[in-house]
Length: 541
Ligand code: GLC
Image (tube, rainbow, N blue to C red; front, top):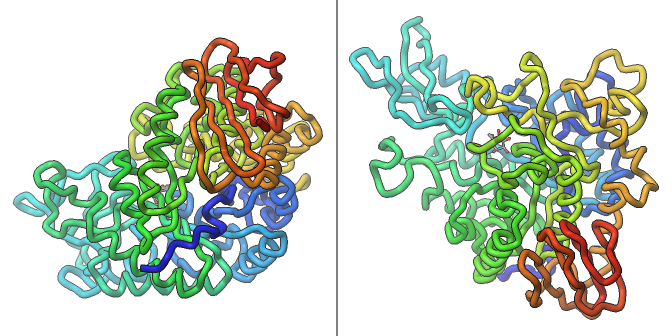
């Protein structure tokens, strides 16, 4: 087991997530692309981030926003080319920005040569063994092999028509039918992904975000969920072997990070993925799901830090991503927590309250020990767009649940950059095509251009906070200790010579600030020595 490198970049980076389709459109086809990202790299540099995580940019039919990959080694022509991705990585590096690519190992697109070959080769063929093909149950095989539920709603099996035209076997897909699951017991699959890692490390990727990381291995006896001790496809013990092998590859290159998407309420099971010979970090989705409540947040923070300490992995802090309701909208509702089951687009939200809390939340997150993930558009104060016409919705989550789940399109609306009307600089002025999802007219006041130079704007708060975080040696990785505080107030100190104190007031009353010599950053106006409700401040003691 190698010694963890306690000074590695991923231990305290501020990582900005670029959902390429919606970031910036360089060629005017209404879809974001690599040219758009390249043109905006100076914006990201100026924002003060350390790394970019790109959602999948590979060749894909886009049945699930690119999480249905046909070729893991080529860029979708919708976004650009491999040469351009290499250029983009080089340009980011020249600005001191690291690059994380998203690898999707649980499943691929049904259009991959492997899956097409499996369909053509028929039952019992070696080609089918790379996936999970099984005969159906029932007299004529008309019933799926199990009654598992897909993460996108509906079942997890689709029946195929065999090459001879008869209804045949079923294949497993934990997500959409266009995303067949790989069989991780197969050596070809393991080999393929080890090659894919090397491919992107060779091209300069500093990190790999691992999609659906806890789902890869399955119980080959295919029991129903709940009938056996171990879950048949979630967080199985043998999945760790995969990441041990990947860690060895990352170590060969040095300085590269493996970052897991692990949805796992049980923190002990979660940090198993972060043992020193596995991944480097993983998204703290428990923090993201927590409500805007000081006691609950403190519980998550304590649990996070105490569970990460034994494996010596840094904590991560994240408020939003491309799968969840934007936190401004969540924080402006009565129920401020997040869960896929409780997505509430029915009730109006209070934008002013949500914004105030989001400002306080980012200062809280950026002051905690470890690294932070920012989702594009949160720095502009964007909210979830909840009135996208059904006909324009693209998310399979919406389609597969028959509209019961509102889907994830609302957090993926193209960013507003400048100007007074759509496409707000997302596409070039003379673009012939509209953005792939419509932007709210009210985003006129939320463009990067409109906010630049306005000290009260969300964008300037993010800039100031990120630059201050860099300048303060106490922030980022390192210890913290709680300070005494009133109910619903979180106060902690970050020792670092000079120290920084962070106080977040989640109560409805003003809170007295501790003694301090200076205010470094505040999410809202202070009231003398008092911190108003839903406000966070960084102080010099
Ligand atoms: C992850 C991704 C999500 C995707 C799913 C299937 O949860 O974040 O966007 O739909 O995996 O790949």
